[in-house]
Length: 169
Image (cartoon, rainbow, N blue to C red; front, top):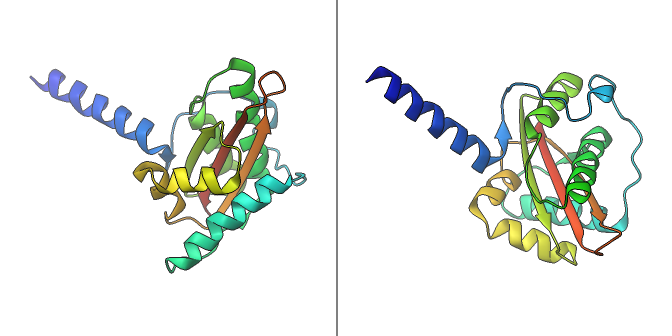
């Protein structure tokens, strides 16, 4: 009986964690262990990334929340995930645990969340989609202080991949 209850609690925890795409602390798996403790300070934002970040901050301010401060290291981790999704032709949160552990270790974050998206052409359309999704909106309006984003285009298909990571530091 206790074993079945333990399995049910464990399964519920796993499902909740995967759906919410957020983490306070977690097990590390190596996505890019070479940069695990090195803080990335340089990141070149494209116009779509900057517009998307501005739209997220405009929305947060419109509902009485603080704007989020961008951190290049978080955008770099987002870009790594876009590269992973493009290479593997998937849209998912694979290796989120490793990204969140890295941000916790390198930046001292207390909480990390993530939104991903695929095939939106404009910043307005992806932000609208995230705001219309309860789990994604929860990250946008969450108790966070910083964020980063990467938006990359698959050179083979022309489709855009989005990874937006939030952190409370």
